[in-house]
Figure 1 (tube, protein in one colour):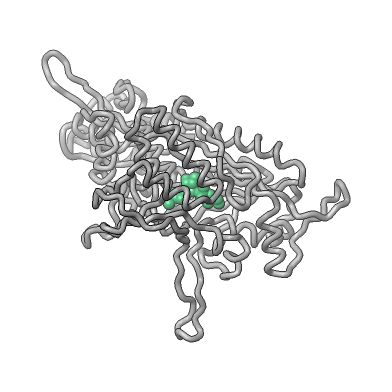
Figure 2 (cartoon, protein in one colour):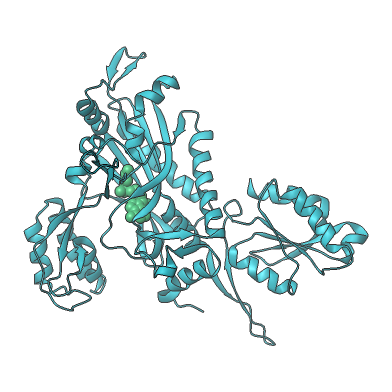
Length: 475
Ligand code: GAP
């Protein structure tokens, strides 16, 4: 059994062992903070994506989706402020040459202090970050004698800003090639398409545009598995509202997004809101939804009141009018924006951490245990595993019939090998909510044994009812 401290390590190992997440290019020793999703991981990730997409678009008549390109005109990032502002204060240790994000270095040290002292240190740090007081941050690090984890020394450089965007060249001939960026957020693809969507979709403010896609950031401190990656996916929605109504919509989206998380059956005590102390250059209010990971409460999603900053900037830089004529009040204006932005990979990590359980099933006669992923049925990679009890006597044929009937409706898994108990345990480990066993009695009375993952209870039901039962649980 894992202790709390090593539970996270156990989860990482489980993700690899059962085909959820692999280190990218592992045969070449991997690439730092870049990961690949395996056969079950990619299914789980897709199910999370679909759940978000459906809840945002299909269930909201006033939100439509788009899929914009990763490459955007370079001026986009000048207008958005990312070229000038998308940076973090960094500090290097002169002996090890290791670079740290200043807030992470101080936070790491604060965790080693008694609670009150740690909180006081973090309050000092927040104040200095808010003021962009880099000299003050360096003094704070030095006066607390915060050491580099590699060299163990306190020999620090000055604190400097470091831009997080990756750049590359567009075009084949070096002279003609221009520098472009891999997008660090998907939001700008929505802003530059505001008028295209509003006009072609005849959308009326208030309305939203949703998007799921890759984003790239040259994160300096890349740690905690897929929590902080250099290539990741975001699920973002920009909701365009009449100026002056942004506060009301901000509160509404805060509530609605929290309800989305809770709709997955996750314990509300595992979540809280955390207001931003230092607002981004575009925001007039911002809050994070934080989840209690095995390494503490951390951000999963941000809700930002982005004002009219982005649309106004694109209007200025493109010299094209980006306005909306509101027929109800007979006025032209640049809409204000409420953004909801959730990291798909972080939501994946949250889902796995929340589902992972090690259970002691020992009886006085026999030691036993299992690892189970208690995933919400609608997110589980495999919904139904189908097992013929033996490989003979017509049982595989009956099992195959059920498989053929169900596989177009949801993801099924078929297996003939090994004892039933071992087959159950393998499905528990990947979070399959239902297993069905076809045995000799099935041939006689058309019933099967269905086994429920969480309770491990087994019941006898008609074979003809299996598909409807699973569909009911995953819808
Ligand atoms: N458009 C606003 C925006 O990008 P953000 O707070 O920088 O805001 C939004 O990012 C979400 O994207 C975060 O809440 C987090 O879930 C996810 N995210 C950000 N950086 C990430 C990274 N390096 N790796 C994985 N997810 C990340």
